[in-house]
Length: 322
Image 1 (cartoon, rainbow, N blue to C red):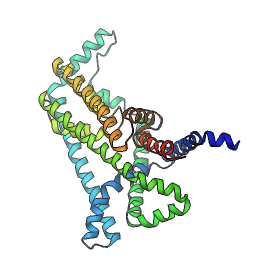
Image 2 (cartoon, rainbow, N blue to C red; image 1 turned 90 degrees about the vertical axis):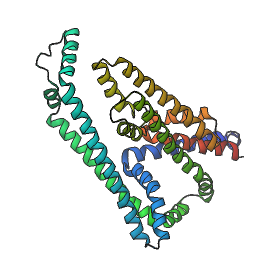
Image 3 (tube, one colour; image 1 turned 120 degrees about the vertical axis):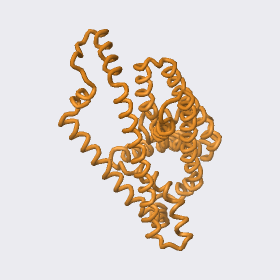
Image 4 (cartoon, rainbow, N blue to C red; image 1 turned 135 degrees about the vertical axis):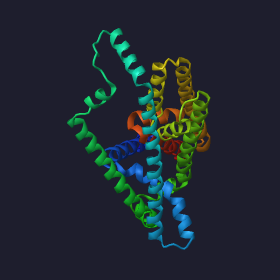
């Protein structure tokens, strides 16, 4: 038995690490929703917190102020983008309502379904019922609570970072903590690269929208950039309505151009993601690409981080464990 363990030591280590990663990620995904908001808020708040500490502001005050400042900025951006979206829909609704209704009537005739009394406003209202409202309210309430808890946890992580790390080092083996500390820079670089990729995607979309003369190009591109964090379904949430609208308005060239931009953005993102992460982490781009794909398929948005992180751990096991 001992000989078998020695022979397959690396394989057992890889399997054990995978089990820990899978169990840990599922626990975070289903039982600790604030985890992702803590990570994001901690990354954003840390530079502000350090600047405040250099300005001789007490740590607790600096932690609270940095979190408040970030939240104010997020709220202002949300209000601005929200008002812009509402304004865009109002303009589309008021200028093209008859054309859209005529298009729907033509579709209903083509598929032989009677939408004689179909009106956009009434139809939108008709799909909103008590059950959907309750579900939406519960989901929204849970998200707000998770975000609130995440902010509180971020505050304590900021001001008590050393104490938390000391506690973790007492719980986990020193060898494991040493390996984690050596790979910490890789984890940070991985998150930074994801941020850079979001900015690149946003820039591509801005240029594409301006070339196609899409109204409110910058606002829509920023929304796409924010949604680009979500795997696969992110930017398409914005692209599909614009493509459908241009098809209804018979702007087929513009609709085709939007489809091309979407495909280009996704292809470029996948290539750059695999290349940048592969170079920074010294892992083959194919491994990174597969780890991200499998991670997203299994864990959702957390998989963007978990997949490459396990690749880093696996590389450490394969090449540094004798």
